[in-house]
Amino acid sequence: MGINKKKAVVFSLRAGWGGAEMMAIKLADAYADLGFDVHFFYFFGNVPTGSESSEIRYYKLKPFFMWGLDRGDSRNILEKVYLQVLDLINFIGSLLLVLSIRKKVGCPSIIHFNKIRGLSGFVFLWSKYILRSKVYYTAHDYEFFSPNAKSSAMSGFGAIYRKLKSPFLRFVDRFFCPSQYVLHVYKSCYPHLNNGNNLANFSFVEVELGADEEKKYKGGVLGYLGRLESIKGVEELCAAFIKSNCKKLVIGGGGSLADRIAEYSAEDQRIEFRGVLDEVGKKSFFHDIDFLVVPSVWEEVYGLVVVESFVNRVPVIVSDQGGLPELISSGISGEVLKLSEINNSDVFAFRLDSIFSRCVGEYESYQQGVDGVIVRDISSFVRDLSIYLSEDEVLYAQSF
Image (tube, rainbow, N blue to C red):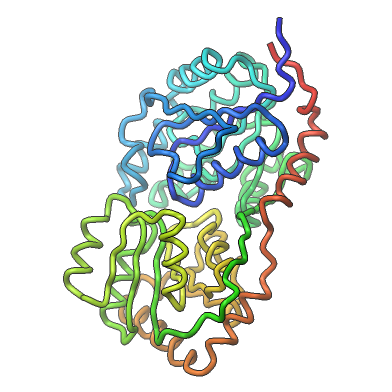
């Protein structure tokens, strides 16, 4: 018998530059800051260069019975149903993951799951009884509980899906909800979890207010930064931009639509596609734009890129989907557009032109609004995490 008082495992389906993926990486950093021996497990992608920590060990595992999950998110109804079914039946993949963690790490004091799409709810049960660990779960996979997030055309199946998943949630010791939107959905779908003790709302980003220089208005330059997938609305943005009078659109990111975005760039020279950006590239990106646009056409659980934009003193235009609107004070730190406006390229283009017409001589008012946003940084999250761990007796938990 051995005692591992401060060993933590963080798991994310993917590693990469996506918001949920970066939050998982920052979460591992937070555990390291608290003195844990941290092990980060993932299936797809890679930990971005410059995001690695010498204090953390990273493991890229071969995915178990999870075909298709490396292709990103899709709006295809059949693919969504397939993923939902996979979530229900993949108890073998969940078991193999937990056994791999035990083989490589032993039994940690805590295991913190992030994106777990495609893994059966058994992953919580196996962690509890095979690893004998405290189990935390950050609710990025809102299709895990939302009735229509995965399959809006099959809400009846969504209800069955949630009912079959629900019993496994009792093996989670604490839920972390990245936004009030997710917190509300969780409480609505699972009233038995509505006790206020195991639901914690948080958001965090590493705050580096290095943009001391006055950002100058560049005459109507938009930016998009993130995964290039259909659910993100980037095609809708390109289609609207081409019809607009905006000066330039700068796009950074990677994904299944990268080739299509390159085609848009070739068709309209005002569209500049920079590909996947490192930290230096991201700084340059935010320096070169007037507004960030986050036109997601599905319910985003949270918008980490919005917070990154605020840190760089750039106002943001978002859709009204999921947790995005709660980050924006419309007309002050940015603008909120309806999904119907995003989906209509003529209306979307008109709204973009209207926003920029108001910016002539008044762009500073948006910047002042951004400067007034209170950004919760990583150090404040570390403090809160230490309180949760102490309450759950993880800091002196015994594992074998």
